[in-house]
Length: 274
Image (tube, rainbow, N blue to C red; front, side, top):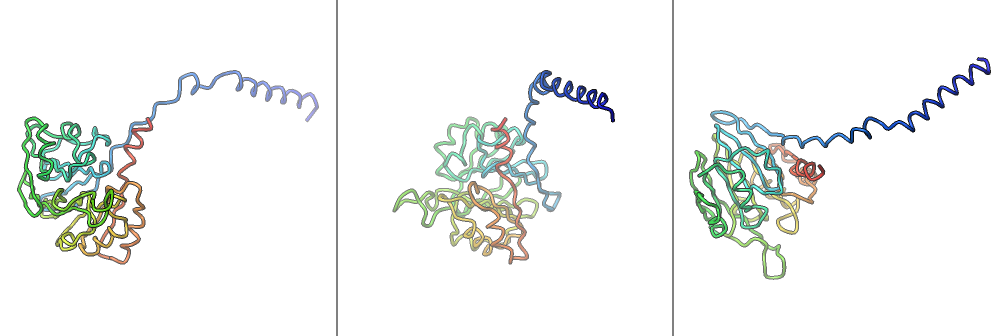
């Protein structure tokens, strides 16, 4: 290559570099593309009599269940992206705390006159919901609502509380629930520790089990509850700050229990980042 040729090539290269520095990019001119909307939550399908049960993790303790054209929402909370939640034919509330009993969230997801099932301790708060069909259950009671059998089971602390002599969740105040849907039994723990009544639950097909400290229990204690309950499928939920893989590892020896790890916090994190 001649010296003149090399000078020509160098000149072209220098011009290209200078143009790139002086001319703004299309991204700079047009602005960064808007953040993509959060994807709708992924759903799981559970075979059942009369059709599949569709389970959709929403956020924290909020779960959506669909079966037979009906929608059930457990513990709707305004910190979730509730735009992804379908209008509920039945709303279940487990406790009086704000991440379980959120009046604005209930109003947003609930169809008019749809039943709300809650513990009796929630009655004063739920009186503020206009046109509400409210059913209050004590531990051990059951009811049929929107074609679903709902059984209230205990949820409480044994040892953990805000200070000595006090517990975060007193026995009898809140409800876990066992739903019978399409011949399947679905358990939702609410906020609880590994208490004796829950270890005696039988024939649970799908379990949603909490595990966050200091309010409920750590993953290993939650796994001990699951080993006693022996559901076919278990989802850790209400687990913010906990290591769900630790929970899954503690159940590896249980060959008849399928652990499903789902991200209950991704969609809302994406929403806050927009």
